[in-house]
Image 1 (cartoon, rainbow, N blue to C red):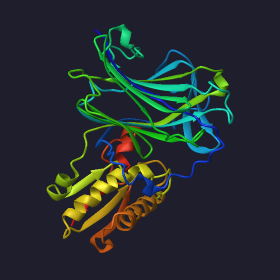
Image 2: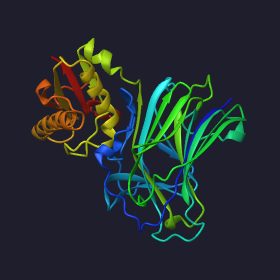
Image 3: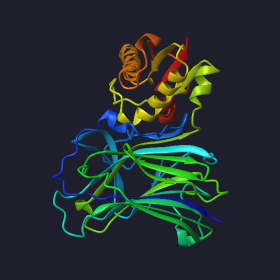
Image 4: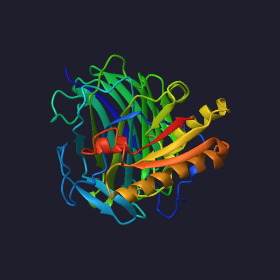
Amino acid sequence: MKKTLSIILTLTVLSAGSLFAQDDFKSYSKFDFVPGEQVIYFEDFSQGALGDFPAKWNTNSSGEIVTISTTGGKWLKTARDGKYKPEIKTTGFPDNFTVEFDIIFKAPVTPEPQSSFQTMMIDFYVAQNEQVLTVDANDGGSGTGARFSMQEGSEFNALNWKDGEPGMQNAQNKDVFAGKNGKPCHISIWIQKQRGRLYVDETKVLDLPYFLPDGVKYNAISFTSANNVEEEQLQNFISNIRIAVGAPDMRNKLMTEGKLVTHGILFDVNSDKIKPESYGTLKEISQVLKDNPTVKVKIVGYTDSDGDDKSNLDLSKKRSASVKNSLSSDFGIDASRMETDGKGESEPISPNTTAEGKANNRRVEILKL
């Protein structure tokens, strides 16, 4: 029997007249999300040609890789009521895994009344083959969903069902999208057995102890884009999809094994500027250091193989210095306890031949001295 888990995201696009200030790093002070330890899927569409549908994705509709003038990188522009499934090579997600992606909801500056409804659904499910895009709740499936809808007020819905029978339902209204019309939002999902947490940028929107039905092994994810007005009036774009398994035991890794490898400290492309969503990881590291005040560490940055060797070496050194500065200025760790270094692309831990391998190689290591 086919089984599914749906996470549906619903959000509100308010009038673009309200401006959203750039995410402030310290606004993430309550952000407790920590990405998984090993990246098993990563897609930023950087290898795809503009105007093409991305390779190794399936759809029942249309879509194309685009750039957006107001933000960097490449994005998948989705179509109304289209379902989009990346091909993820896994036999099943473990009990503990994380999903992250960036999304842009773009609506008219002054949408018509009742015309700003838009939904992005995320389904986790058991796929018997790579062509199966999704399974609906009334199709004998099993799973969980969370929905963000673009309407007046930011509404988040969570639901689950098992073997076609409806289960938990939860609805929340949180105004976290005001002023973000046409701007990237970072979505983070943290699954720990049945528990599910959902974050939009720095805000935890849902934290549900029984988010997932028990006893179901999922191996696939898909995105569904929907709205109730003309195609060009409301658009969804997604990018930087990252799925990782295993939450790192930072204390044990650093204090017992002497080395902590983290993929949760993220930077802007070709930059040493730390992204705000790194806050949860840095906070965990700082707590380990505060609990062990005599420990000194070396912070070492690494890159993937894109670009030339010298630029990557310089960038890795700058990034390790940025981590030290943040731990000192934002978290109160004495700078004298921290040394920095960078190794560039010289010591990969995964092949640089895949997007997932490159994502694993972009890392920061904390070494106990």
